[in-house]
Amino acid sequence: MLTLIVLIFCSAVSEQEYHFPLSYNDYKTFDTIIPFSGYWLSENYYENIINNKSPKAAQNNSYVVVIPDRTLKATTILYDFHDGFDYYTTVWNLNQFEIWEVNDDIISNFINKIEVISPTRIKIGQDYFLKINPETKHGFLHNVLKDEILVLEEILFMGNYLTNDGKKVKLDKDGQIRGLDKYYYYKPYTDYYDEGMQVDQLILIKSKRDLDWKDCEEFGYRFNSDTLELYKLKCLVFDSVSNNCAEVELGELKYKLLKINNNR
Image (cartoon, rainbow, N blue to C red; front, side, top):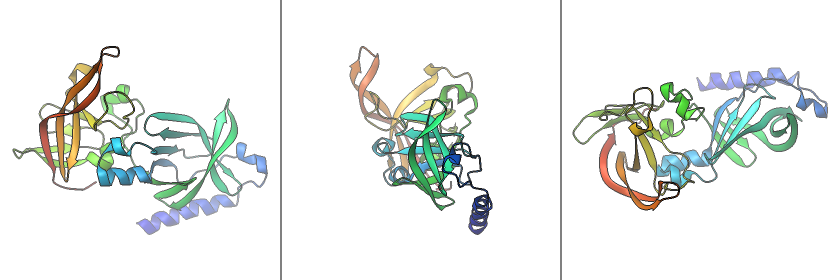
């Protein structure tokens, strides 16, 4: 199967090479397919998550790049899961794909070239990226999550678990949770730059539809080998201006979920 993917990928590139323009300025108008379109996650973030299982610790210098199916379309870059921008585009220029900044609908500033290492790995500038297939449709949660890319659900949480009393719990890549009390959805945080984010956290949601935030409960969590531990949050410092807890720590242990398979 991998061989077939490689052949298809290389074929798509070679077919286009006969039609690529030679004029220096043609890249600003030249429309062609991008064979490696899709969602790309910085390799260092992925490896950090797999090894340490802490999105808070992995957040710095992390990137998600969404590359369109054709040149000249918007290319989205999400920096550290905090700031996302789509005023970039991907072009074919001087026999390579490149990312450029777009200002007032004008392709203006070169950002980085893109090197294809394999169908599942690319290099942008000095950073390596891995191909991911995140969930982007969230059912009734769509109005809340909007266009958020569900990365952690797939690479960290998805799987089957057992509670201490032997009940089966399933976490899906689209954010659904099954078998854990009356919770229907879970949402792990990826952005820890705001107040009250001293520990890894997620939200458990009791609503099945028509989301009301009173049905959302925040928990701290950590992975102890193959066991996901969920804790109530203990507020250490309350911010009366923002009306939020400014500093938290893990409190009472609420759930222990043993992961019973590693199937993706």
